[in-house]
Length: 345
Ligand code: 5GP
Ligand code: MN
Image 1 (tube, rainbow, N blue to C red):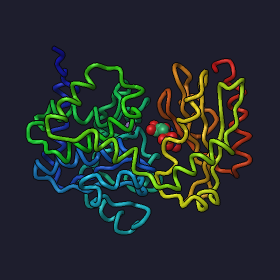
Image 2 (cartoon, rainbow, N blue to C red):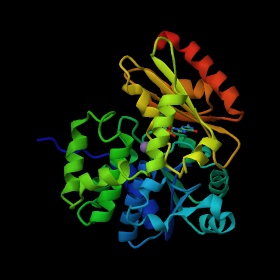
Image 3 (cartoon, protein in one colour):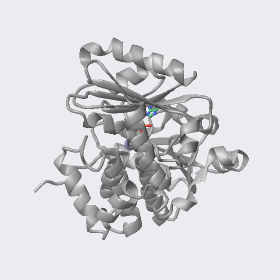
Image 4 (cartoon, helix red, strand yellow):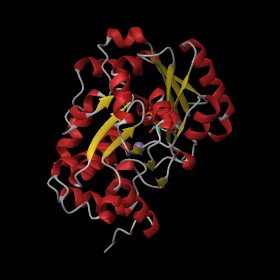
């Protein structure tokens, strides 16, 4: 029988518990373009802090995708970009900051500048490579873990926060583990993950329903958008080992695009035999930039390509970034990136 080992050292545990004990109002934040893991880990961690009697504020730079709307407690999240003045004040009123599912403050955009200028101590809880340890009093970083939700659950087990955890927090943590692994189809070979899932199931979560809530609640027009992209917009390169597709704002309008509708599209070209790398280039709906998503299989390093060509980063098989120029230029950059990495394809 496997057992879940402690996540942090005794010294770190003491530091963390002291930071929490000395705080009254605690800010919990997730990255721009929050995904299931950012939102799930923030809600799961906030639930624990609330059970300790803390006042909590959960804040993200901008809204989450529509397919997470069903998550219990999600309506309490504040979006910095929608209410900058109030959000800035709320940040200044907090005396401890948790940074979940990101490794450096710049991933919060302007919200990160406000937090950097505020003198409350910060704690990073994350699973991305190369955390900015200088940005935090304590860094709990585990890149080998499938999700920040996994890190949070292990932390709760160690701190004694599991016993009283309810169904809602368990659902939030399961959601992040599920979304960051594509429904446990990648980055999910650690046996301990399934023990952790078992602990969440013991809280009465309906994992099949969670799967449907996240992956099978799209609109008809999203399904047609998928067909359109695969039929009309997908170009293959390097003997079908890499692909690029683009998505413009006007196409989004045509297909009644709502936040989250692009999720998962970038994985689809990898269904073709022999494919190693998929790149999606999407016009941002809020700013004049092109959002880049990269997905790969096996050892192709998306994160290196994202850093080198797309002002971004991420994980080995899933990374992202952005380019500050028009889509046509972005395509040229992506083609250059594929050319430069041809030897790894
Ligand atoms: P997605 O393609 O779903 O937007 O992002 C996939 C992964 O890439 C994220 O989980 C995150 O780790 C990373 N990522 C996405 N966008 C950025 C970015 O702009 N900068 C960095 N450093 N990482 C990103
Ligand atoms: Mn994550």
